[in-house]
Image 1 (cartoon, rainbow, N blue to C red):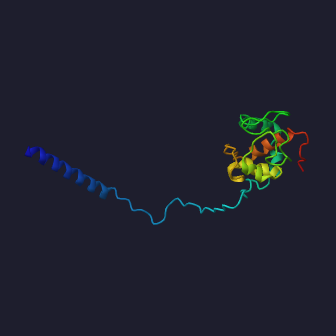
Image 2 (cartoon, rainbow, N blue to C red):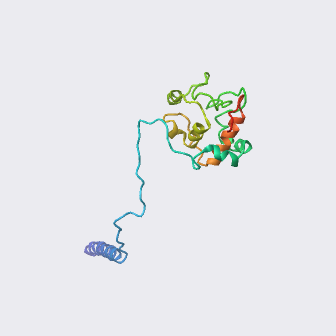
Image 3 (tube, rainbow, N blue to C red):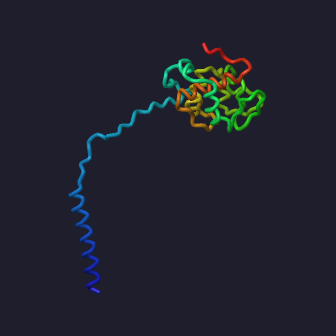
Length: 173
């Protein structure tokens, strides 16, 4: 019995010594300043919209580098929840025929979130660009679950496509 107890104690001491020796051999001094700096966060809880601009600064300039045909391809991401056909039915999201130029949250046969109804701005090219970039940040409280389109070119293409699918498309100039 004594041999078992001595063996356990010696094993514990050996593990402790090996741990201390490896700590001293592989010691790394930590820097005073972290290599990864976190940018400061600006919390404006009272604002409804995000005032961030698109990558190019102006969505109108990006229209020249894309087309409505490109937008039709990108719109496939949206088609699961939205219809863009004339007379199309609402799905999970509202029908988007003639959405540009229309007041946000104004289709009578769709139940919008309270935030969208209160937003009540006209869907211009710039408004749609901001919303499509980060919907939950542009209109805080929207029920749209889509994360957004980070590519300015993709957003411009989708906006051109939606503008084309309207009774009275908005002028591009």
